Length: 205
Image 1: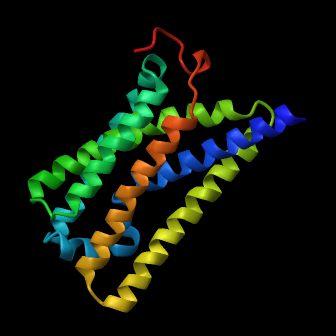
Image 2 (image 1 turned 180 degrees about the horizontal axis):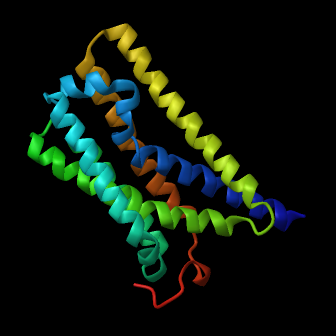
């Protein structure tokens, strides 16, 4: 019974950690749902330019889905997850400085690589291995935590907006929260995730 409880606790930690990582990695691209106008205003973009950024992100994501799964079979899952979080974390923080449109195009393209090619297949592989009997519960709990975290961050943004009426402050605050969440998730992942042979099918890099 003690062993089972320990395993359950470990699984819960990993579920929460991966959920935090998911929320962080998809933070900026998915802000368009609630904060499209604020993004456009703060980044000094036209509707066409901002739409182009999302198109770049979507296109790179589509290509990344094709090769991400293969990549996770040959490279350390832990290295992929940590690299995705660290790279994307710095990219989110860099957006606070309001870079040029060309730089934003590059940032959105790389964020697609980190979130889909590097993180998504690796995280699914880890989640799939957490429970041999209750995989549905694992994925269900994972999605619940992702949704709750997303609602909390959006809620914080709306509170900032109501109190400050400053679009630039709201945008930078939310992006900053997403950026910090990357490094929090990376910290816990590095400590609690113990990789073993079941995560790879070939020689690991």
